[in-house]
Image (cartoon, rainbow, N blue to C red; front, top):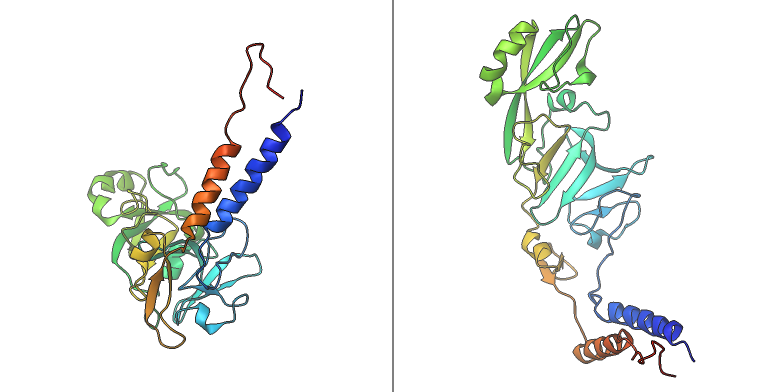
Length: 266
């Protein structure tokens, strides 16, 4: 009896890769890039400047770089360098964090002016210094990077101050000050983001407007060789080739006939 399974697997695998090749986008674009494993995918309107030198790979002001630790970074003109945590291409939100994990310190003088980024809204947090003679309950988020030798620093959303004041008084917390953290409505945002202290914050961009294109599976790109107008292109298919490949694939996965004695026909 001849065993057809190796031929079946080879035929199926070949057909699968043929189908994948046929349905791939044919648009001529700068490919996406990564700084390293686990880093966000970088594509238009962004680019990784050291790997994609072509100026038509990027919308002006959307340059990103990879640092020595292979982290994706963005430099804001008046606020310095931040780590890019996530890029939400549909909602057009850039999620950033401080390289030293001390966002409250960085945001004291934060100003996105002079860049493409805008703040959708701010959430206010009041920071308190609490003596280390008492332990701080987990319900009060610690800001360890601001701790001193004799005190902890905790963050409380301004909207929650009234219900936490008794606890703060019991802990003898004082010397408070308020900071504002940029927050946005986004697919990647936690539903509790507005009331919980986080080391990440979001900035939005309005131009180029590519969110609906990304949501529909398209590729946003420049309209022509010059100018900043953009267009949305979708994958192009050779319908007859795709149908043919699908038929071949379906036959390749068709189970062979099994005889009454459990064997397979020659």
